[in-house]
Image (tube, rainbow, N blue to C red; front, side, top):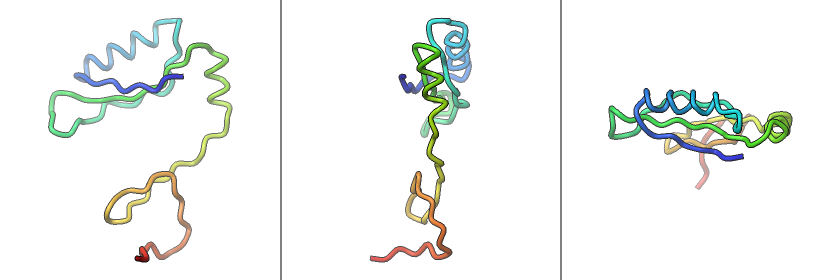
Length: 92
């Protein structure tokens, strides 16, 4: 499996993702929507995963995926952490 980031205009990104979807040599999994790039109004970025075979794709999607939670703590985001306590204060 390859995880790739595409950068370009929205039109170019959509064109390339369509081309990948039509190509039977690869399987593109869950391409993201084009997202803004900081400092540029014209160019966007998108992410996708590419698999070589259907067996590889099925093994990846059948495996249990961890739950990803984005939690904001004021100075930055912590990814993949789930805190059930009511208090989110940091201790120094």
